[in-house]
Image (cartoon, rainbow, N blue to C red):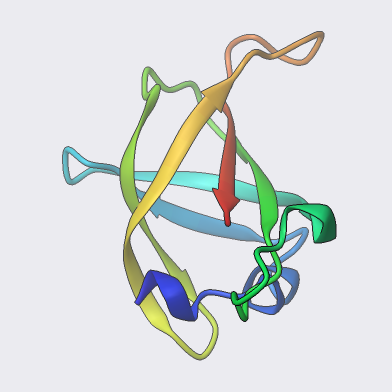
Length: 103
């Protein structure tokens, strides 16, 4: 299922609120932020354009990283998405900021 994920699935959700299903079974409300395509990282025989997505929590969280699930347009619930936390870097340190990379 992960191979089917394209940047367009996240582009449709950009700026919206979604639910990130965490590895422990809990759910975290997130804001789906900036999407960045990475054409220089594309492998010759790959159909997918590499891209990354930024997420931010709407509430404080201790979650750092792991395999999560998200509901995506056309695909439904996609499991096994590795989400990693990034430093707040001047943003509200009480919230969580995350990054997803698809190669």
